[in-house]
Image 1 (spheres, rainbow, N blue to C red):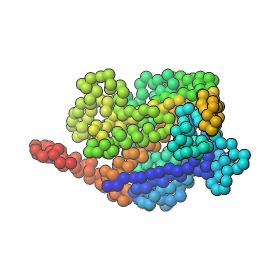
Image 2 (image 1 turned 45 degrees about the vertical axis):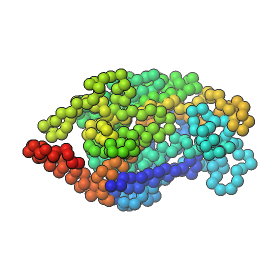
Image 3 (image 1 turned 30 degrees about the horizontal axis):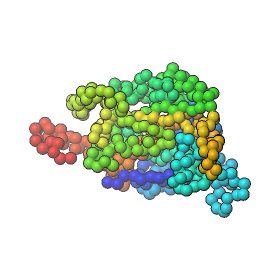
Image 4 (image 1 turned 135 degrees about the horizontal axis):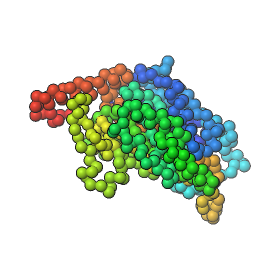
Length: 414
């Protein structure tokens, strides 16, 4: 079965951003309210820059949806850049560069400026700045909002939390509490996270995180942190151990790592496992008679074993470096004259970890939607639902019946 494909296009100060997603089955109801809400979530967060005061992101559906339902064709989305009017001369599509055009020639440390200019042989770093910008993530979030609505149709929940900003760490992140949490507990966690302007469940820790952001701002600096994305009720069997590029953990790691400024991605307990013994970190397996399902009291694996989802919550954590554009600039070199130069000054966030958490949700949603479509297929949402029910219920029932009869072939097939 084929999954989904998606791409984005557009520059930070061009006319706008474009996202295209193909492979979403027909008949899926899409809420415009939820789509716009996701874009609004991305723009919030303590420590964001003045660009968020200019842009009021709104997704315009160009194709693929009719009367609020997908029709099986590619879904294309356009997001206008409100700041385009202030950059139309510098970012003109046609004609020659204006005589008074000020080229950007001093690369910013920590950005793609120098490496990108050398790779594409640009003499004006703006060609790199515009596409390498995190502004592209608005289109990703819009596409992720479509993916989330497909996952929601199958009762799969994705949410996130900021677990560290600067040196301030959350003592008990939500992802470590999921195994013993009820649906009511999880809903309570989510409500507190959404109310927090640093996207953190614990009020006292959130206050300390905001103080760390304020301190960095006063010092003309920036601050990074860590975030977690949690996926509940994901079915068993997404991803595959059969090829290196089909492993679900690898796919998720690549997707989240592609977010600008993300430097590490971990699945489950991640680097905490390095200092422990195997007997401490592998999740023991039990059969739960009441639910007729396999159960693990722990989830150090983060819901993925051998590159395949195992039915437990999928846990992805990531580290975001401090934003590299600083109020107090770092040393650099003028690429034209090869002498010390002052880096290009530009609006910048002090901290974008809360926003990155929401972008990571979108990236995880896109990967899981792709895997869900590959596993259960179907040209329409009804066909996909029927395929999923057949696999998850009828096959499970058949296996249970054969197990009760002591069939030696159990587990020998798929």
